Length: 166
Image 1 (cartoon, one colour):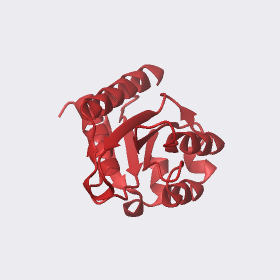
Image 2 (cartoon, one colour; image 1 turned 180 degrees about the vertical axis):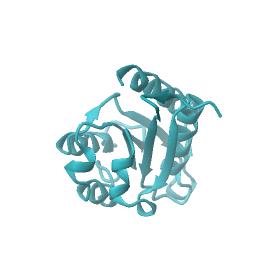
Image 3 (cartoon, one colour; image 1 turned 60 degrees about the horizontal axis):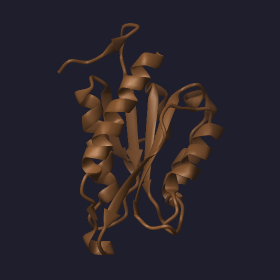
Image 4 (tube, helix red, strand yellow; image 1 turned 120 degrees about the horizontal axis):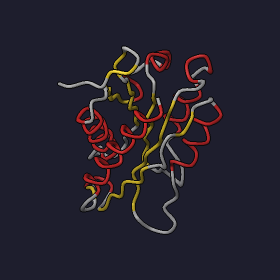
């Protein structure tokens, strides 16, 4: 596969997520994002937050964080993961956020809290957040039509913008 090399190194992006529904909608979006980034030439790894150690963040140039919107905010677990990061592994790195949510006026938004925490940690936000809409009942959620393509395009644009800025 053709990888983009900058300053003699492959562009490394880490996608981490939490996913709580039986249908794992946030995981599906995370995997779409990582695959799209790979298609753009980035070296993108995608992990459920429990499957990556916080200290691994230092090995990546960019961190993408996703969570379902739960009670108007991200999951407690994804915020705890972010809280375990140290500024020596985050300062000056690039980041972006995404969430999955039901499309309604009162659904809330997980990305606001994720972006605020990323900013506190010294990350530079490189893209507006991605909001991926789901529909259905808790045990039968599915992506709304067009949401997979939207996630793929968001990830491709993020990589293109990231490559221009380094």
